[in-house]
Structure formats: structure tokens, C-alpha cells
Length: 312
Image 1 (cartoon, helix red, strand yellow):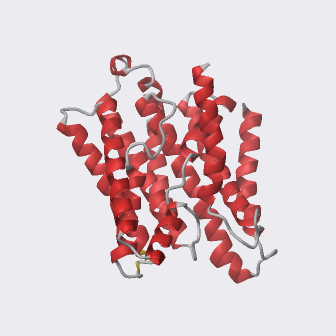
Image 2: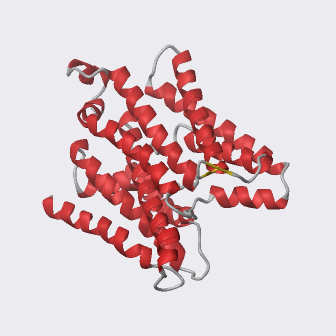
């Protein structure tokens, strides 16, 4: 176990140190390194951590190994907010953050509170109610995005589609700093609740008998994972399958105990996303592909494999 963690730490550190040097222009000069490459690698690493950890949380929350960070409609809300701003808003930046990202984040918050409100309206915070509310909100937001695209011109539609593919085209350190705030806050909550997540997997009755405040724990996990997902999607677009693949791989390689699983997911999630972005930058250089396309190409077969394995 210690050897596996040591290898994983080296892999994560290697991506952070080496991938800023990777690109279509060869060895970059200082300005390219400081303004483009390092912020991009940090953003990719942090978004991978946020999405992978959120996936782990939702899989524990719903006791469903196929749950992802996008299950509850957070990505749909962020995409709707971004699409609305691309269609109707000016191209400006506020406090160093692109207005599209801010609109996406507020859209994610809208989705979170809509799902929470629908769940509470049913008189509780049951996982089945949360799941159904999230699916309904996600479908509704997706239909609104299609409606906005239908009434947009070709340039606006292209911007929306390109954003929906996900990517890390950042300049400067504002984006990774803001993303780090939400990611670290979510990780702190998750780190304090690893024991509770283990007990939630055994069922609400057993968890309650062991002293877990089930309703309070669910709320804390729900909001922390949703905020991490909302921030990652707002800044980077809806990059799928990371929250599905990384927790599964880490459970196979390490342990299902969340006290050991959490650090593995953090390290491997950051490594995986940074590696995917490196592939996106170099695979067809000098043309850059969206990182979300790489994760989708890897995640689709992975998801099919999970379904076939579950059926067998």
C-alpha cells in the first residue's frame, strides 16, 4: 500500500513539474511558462481533484458506483448560466474572472438550490428524491440550452459548443487561485467526514445506530461536492467521466475505506486530468483538442466495461 501511494505521489508531482514544459512550441520562454503553461497545469490538476473527489462523494452518498458529479444537474446549471451569458451578456471580466465563468458558477448554484428545494419539498433529504430531482433539473436545463442555441447565431452557437467540450484555456493565476479556494474547502469537509461516508455505505439505520447524523452528513456532503463541481465546471466546462473513472480505479488499486481512498482520489484525479490535458495539447499539435474530448474517449469504453461487468 505504501509503495502504491509513493508511486502515485511521484506521478502527481511529475505531472505538475513536467507538463508545463509540454506543448507545441517546445521549451517555452519565461512569459509563456508563467502566464500560460503553469496556470493551465494547475487549473487542470485542481479541476481533476475537484471532479474526482465529488464523484467519490456522490457514489458514497447514493450508494451507487455509477453516480458522477453531474448526476444532480450541477453541470447543466453551469452550462445554462454560461450559455445565457454567451448569448445575451457582454464580453467582460469581473475581479479577474471571465463573466462567462461567473455566470456558469451562479447557474451551478441555481441547480444546487433547485435540487435541494425539490428534495425538501418532499419532506426529507432522501437519496432517491435527490437523484430524481437532479435528473429532472438536468434535463430541463439541457432543453433550455438547446433553445438558446436555436435562437443564437453561428458564432454564438460555436462558442457554446466549444465551451461544452471543456478545456483549460486560462491566462494568469486568477483561475487556479479561485478554483483552489472551492476545492480546498470541499476537501476539508470531505476529509472530516470520511468515517461517516464509510458508515453511510452500510445503510442509514446502521449509520444512525453508530452515531452518525445522517441528514446533516448528507447535506454537508451534498453541498461540498456540488460547490466543487460547480466551480470546476464554471471555470473549465463540463468535463465528463473523471468523477466516474478515478474513484473506481482507486478502489481497485487501493482500498474502499474512504480514509485511504480520499488521498488516492486526490492524487490520481489531479494526475489523470493533467495527463489528459497534456494529450489534448500535443496529440495533434499544433492543433489543440478540448480536454473533455479526451476524457470522453476514455470514459465511454470505461463506462461500457462497468455495465458489462455488472451484468456478468
